[in-house]
Image (cartoon, rainbow, N blue to C red; front, side, top):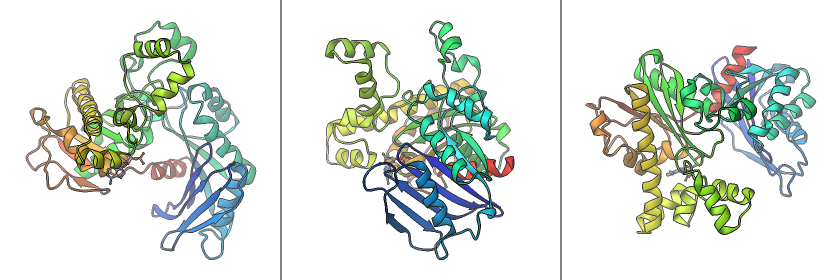
Length: 396
Ligand code: AMP
């Protein structure tokens, strides 16, 4: 059973083909600069070298056609005919309150996703373009939508309602939604598997720390709180995003600097976080390197990032009334020995004890807490594509 997984952005499209009989990745690739000069497709069949082809790719439909050609290619393809493709699973960022699980896509679901565009104006239109392009090119293949927001739909009202006039929730749906749900779901479940315990009996904090970061409290397998909010701007400091702020800073900067709402929004989304504090880069590798050279503001950026995550761990342990495991994932969480150690430092009082040697690991599953640590700390590389493929298989 072969399933194509697609993660479609406004000018890029990532894909993977899974053989779901054994969950093996047969092929993966990336189409870049769709609609922009210099567009290209990089296609890799597992076990062979990648092939990069530069060619004009004016729109998402052309991108999907190229992907299909690559998948059917005699030497680098993984399909003999399109009939082998049982489903196409799509990552979709925002489903609002409409879907708490993955669903098969039809015209009703598409209408609901279009209604969510105001909630995710940068992401949902691109996701929708990807789905419509597949519908055009592969009209007979079933499609499934897997939503970043779905896993967090189990949050209780007290966690998702903001203390502003309630009418804004009713009128515009202003509430905490949370994001990276597919990643938090995968990492929490994998953590339970690694610990050999039923997830229903575990309290886990999953720290998805990458260019965008979010931290989630997973109690008994359900998301009960998460650091991102109405938008992915909230929570811990990120590469270029500010994370949590006193909301009055917005009007203060707008009035004092005579900036428009759009300008301040862009300031907090694109020029803040690690980049804003360090003045050097949004990339943690650059920040770590600059900090090791003694750059004070890069050191400070690291401290702000780690301190923010540490506070969420404390808050979520309190929210769940206990804690069994903390799992780190995504670019920073999987790779940064320094950030993990800074986040966990000083949390021994709540049973978190890192093992310095075990923490010296990058990009692979590992238990990094000491044998005596009451709370287990793990590195769990995320695999959102596998969740999308599994959900697509389940729904077929
Ligand atoms: P993601 O958004 O999950 O791709 O994560 C991107 C972030 O992970 C960037 O800030 C990278 O600097 C960071 N990252 C990737 N590899 C490493 C590494 N080996 N050490 C530290 N940070 C890393």
